[in-house]
Length: 183
Image 1 (cartoon, rainbow, N blue to C red):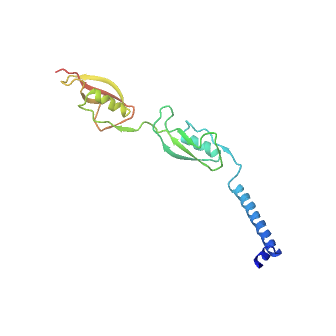
Image 2: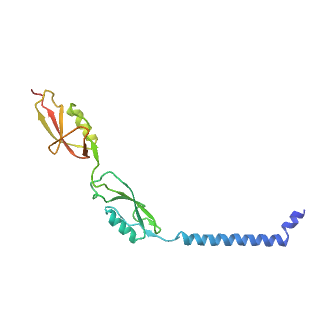
Image 3: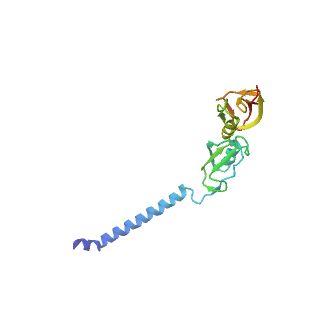
C-alpha cells in the first residue's frame, strides 16, 4: 500500500511534472534545431538543363547553389547535340534545397562502335537482317561475277573493304558485294 501512497505524494508529482516539462523542452528545441539544420521551407527550383553542354549546365546549377553530378552517358541520340544533357534527376521545375546534387545523363559524342559480324559466304537474305539488327544500314548492292547468286562476297564501307569482326559505328552504311550467279 505504501507504493500507491508514494504515487500520490507531492514529491513524486513534482518530479513527474519536472520530467514532462524537460521532455517537452527537449522535443521543442530538437525540432527547432532540425528546422534550422535541414533548411526547412527552403525551395530552389531546378532549372531545365536539357540540350545544354556539361559546362553550361554546371554554371547554371552553381548560380542556383546546386551541384552537377554526371551519372552516366546513354546511347547516342541524334536529336540532341553531342555531349549535351539528355536527362536529369530531379526533373526540371522540382523544388530542392541548396547544395543538392542534380544527376545528369549525357549524350555521347557519337554512336558507339560495333563489331561487324561475319556474313561472308552467307546469302544476302541472311546478311541484311543480321546487319540491320545490329544497327547498321544497308547501302548499295554491288554484283560481281560469281557462281553463287546473292552470296555475300565482301562488305564495303565508304569504298573500303570491311573485314568481319572489325569495328564500325552504329548506323554506318555497309555496301554488300554479292555474286550475280554467272561464270
